[in-house]
Amino acid sequence: MIRIEHLHKKYQANKRDIIALQDINLDIAQGEIFGIIGRSGAGKSTLIRTLNLLERPDDGRVLIDGEDITALGHEALLELRQRVGMVFQHFNLLNAKTVAQNIDWPLKITGRYSREERAARVDELLQLVGLEAHRDQYPSQLSGGQKQRVGIARALANTPRLLLCDEATSSLDPETTASILRLLLEINRKLGLTIVLITHEMEVIRSICDRVAVLDAGAVAEHGKVVDIFLRPQHAVTRALLAESHAWDENDLYYQRREGGKLVRLTYAGELAAQPILSQLTAATAALATIVRGTVSRIKDTPYGQLLVEFSGGEHAVAQVLERLRHSGIDHEVLA
Ligand SMILES: Nc1ncnc2c1ncn2[C@@H]1O[C@H](COP(=O)(O)OP(=O)(O)OP(=O)(O)O)[C@@H](O)[C@H]1O
Image 1 (tube, rainbow, N blue to C red):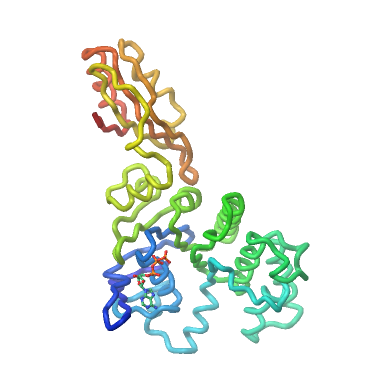
Image 2: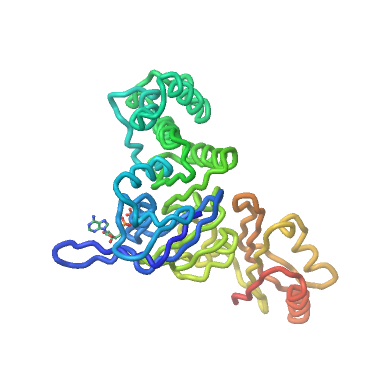
């Protein structure tokens, strides 16, 4: 649905060039939730803003449904912005207008619908985001999560095919973040809407994204399915972002190394996550398994586990376990 080809962008500040994007190439499929993550200054906002040309690239192309949006004229660009909804970190609501009027606004400015049609659409959207009871309130009377629900309803008003979320949950507490992420997932599934979001939180990527691109200094460090990037990160920036998300930090372990013990990281996903893996590995050997650290959770819909285990119990027993591991189909890495 979206093809990003050789995208470059630089800014000028104090007569110096700041490279914001360098040679970005990505494909985003219809109906997926695609996450873009990176540290502050990595180029996330610049990249997402090129997808509706709030930011114009210096070089390269952005194709949406095969159409090169970087070549669009003024009228066509306005029309594009109706097909591409956007949700902002700080909501950007009109404070002098009610919830219903905020949602109605993008419908009104198209001049395309009757008052009745607009009212019906606003009702539908209020219901979708669960704000029927707040329709006549003003933004100042709403919580952050409710404001963002208005922002989402407004972005969906003109039935876009693509929704861009610019740090949509970064101003919200964890519980509200979770409810907004659930809403985005529901919208994605119910309406088949493609969502591109930027975030600096791995947790956002883990809970709703299908694929992710990790940006570092304006370039794509790595990209792929979230399960693959989470369980087998290749780039130092990805590893650091994962460590900071407290999913697993291997530099901080509390355990007493046993004589001859081997510290092994086991990574498995899908059906294997429901298997008694450690019991199966140590059965019929004299090996002992000590869990040093572990996560058993879900990446979107895929269950996974990642365990740091020390196998001990003598050289022979440990060798036997490692041999079994090699034939098990479980990803593993002997760390020490
Ligand atoms: N209008 C601008 N003028 C000059 N430099 C800019 C401008 N906008 C962004 N930059 C610079 O471009 C680089 C990328 O910025 P961008 O905002 O895209 O990063 P980001 O990953 O979204 O960061 P953050 O998470 O802090 O928002 C940074 O070095 C930033 O300082």
